[in-house]
Image 1 (cartoon, rainbow, N blue to C red):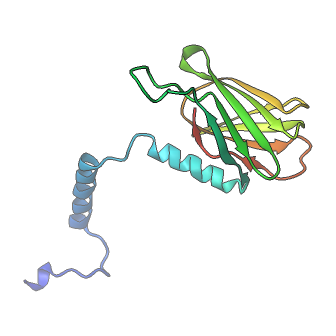
Image 2: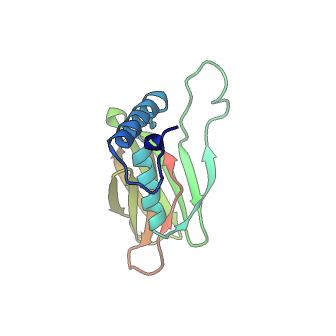
Image 3: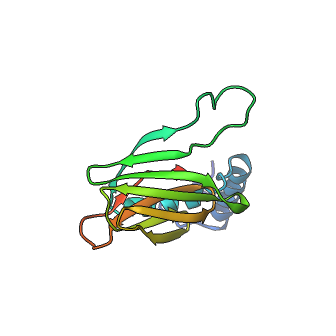
Length: 165
């Protein structure tokens, strides 16, 4: 090996290094591309983590019996309940126009709430009534999480885990 071909890791990158790294990036992109939506989902998860909210546990998913067997198409879950020490939220998912989803929700104990629907790249907010009922009329399918806050500003935020609508 000649003295010219030796390389020190302390030296700055030169044109040969930049070309080599570009070739490696191209090969990696061809052989193992980043999955579609991964960046958006990662940023979404980081945003939710940044809320420093109490996270509810997914407690119950109701699906019709025998929905996994046979030749029938899979049936999507209709009712999901989330629980935490301070609040329980139940949502019901139903089809809406254009392949979208309607989300009807109820929170207990019943009180006026601000409810945020977090999606990759967007947040939609609605208010519950005094009984804790809220609705998101037509939501695109995909990953989502709810963040619930008391309308009077007392207490902290409570977040559901990310679910697929």
